[in-house]
Length: 192
Image 1: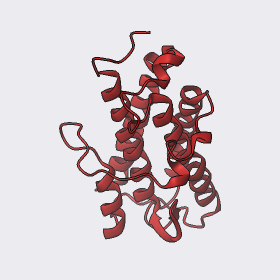
Image 2: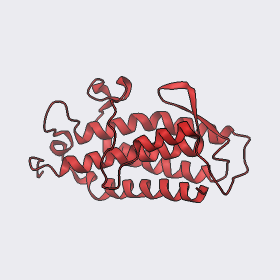
Image 3: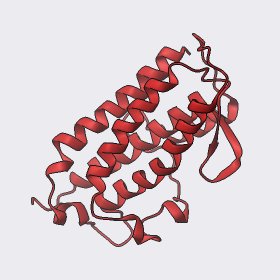
């Protein structure tokens, strides 16, 4: 694959997320944001709080690695590592926008187990975070996506190539934005 494909893929997903947040979710009432069909399902606020928690870790880490790297010569082609490809492919939605494999969120990123993640400003914070992610994507164009290494949230010892980390974050965001959309399509979802 080319580095251009990586940038197009992650930028397209992120721009779509921004559009949805601006046109759809920013107009939702508190009742709609906090509605859940059952106790084991996340509300919109919880989905967005989960994404905001991940953004806190990954945006800081990605910015730090991009700013500090000595690998400043971008390459035309990009090759994922076997681990990296496995990680982002596990997050990527199927062709029918369905989840192929479910995961349990780690406790510190799970709003069901950590209700302090929900702060009441989830949509605005996520919109700001997605705009910040776009600027991270723009900055990453000037570095080598294969040589820059990024630790993952669950272990500082496991590091992904920057290109794989960017794809993971984008696909993780896309997965949960689809989860939010599916929630709003439920028949019982409040009209206001």
